[in-house]
Every structure is written in C-alpha cells, then in structure tokens.
Length: 62
Image (cartoon, rainbow, N blue to C red; front, top):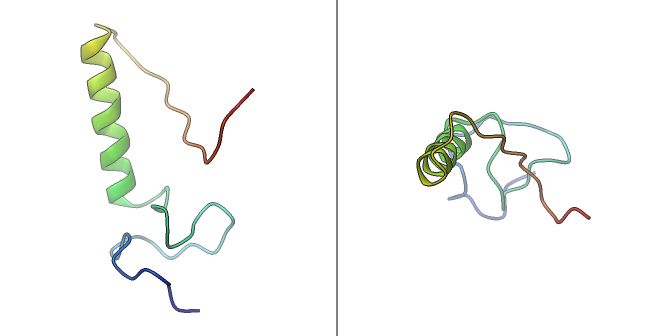
C-alpha cells in the first residue's frame, strides 16, 4: 500500500504495525530518535536535571 504522504519520514524503516502511519515518524527511525534526543536535552537543560523520561504516545493519559 502506498503512503498517502510520501514526504513523511521517507528514510524511515518499513514497519507494519498500529504505531506507524504516514502521518507519524516510525519509532525506530533516525528522525524519531533525533527528535527524542533533542527534546530530552532541552528538558534536562531547562530543569537542570541529570535525566528525563519521555513516553511517546498518540493521545492523552488520565
């Protein structure tokens, strides 16, 4: 099946699961890992923390 949006994560890994669509980044791709590393670095700097815990998700928790 062709992707609806070819420009989304074009170099990402092909993954056939419920966590990946052409509207999201594959959790195993270098692009996704780079985004998470950047966010982690920013949070550590802002909060002067040694570590962060990031939980990727597609909705709200509560």
